[in-house]
Length: 260
Image (cartoon, rainbow, N blue to C red; front, side, top):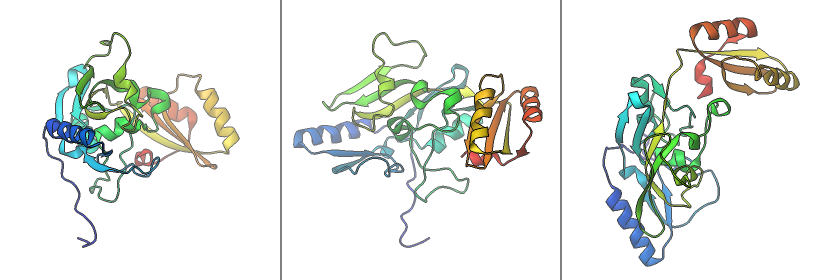
């Protein structure tokens, strides 16, 4: 291993909410700022923040997961790769496809090192976002340490359980400004039976016109990308609908890893 490179952080299942709460309260008493981070994989976003580091990765692990209820609850420091692996084993997925940015310590499978808390705090979604929704659309509940040093719970583990303002979804995209996320409950969905990615050569104007047309038709498109010369599409759904759409649209098949 390169002597200049630090070893990757190894996540362990541990409830460290008391330690995080103590660090927040100490910072409040000392009037010192805190820099909340998980894997620090999104440090390139926004402005630099000074202060003592509060590392959420000490608070990690899947708390509950019931595939039959399509709900998973995980601590903020849980790596997205761990969450996605648990969902994959049950044939399910996070529909918003949050990116898992890597700082160079990804594993052999290419999985990044982003965390569940960072996913919600940043609110970034992947290529399925226009068709399935954003991160906030799948947040059911959160536990948060507030700036007053209180550990509170918002929402729950069902879709319709909030009477009043939905504070859990407000945490999505808050970048830690509203509090320290310690736990998140997320709605998940079954993975599609078939996924096919294709590439079609066309200019930008043609691609926009085609996408506008296809958007009004029952085509199983779940991702689209254009680089100025080639339009790439992902088709997902039942075998029959995907095969029919591929036959109609044409195009060459491409590696589905493109979307990651």
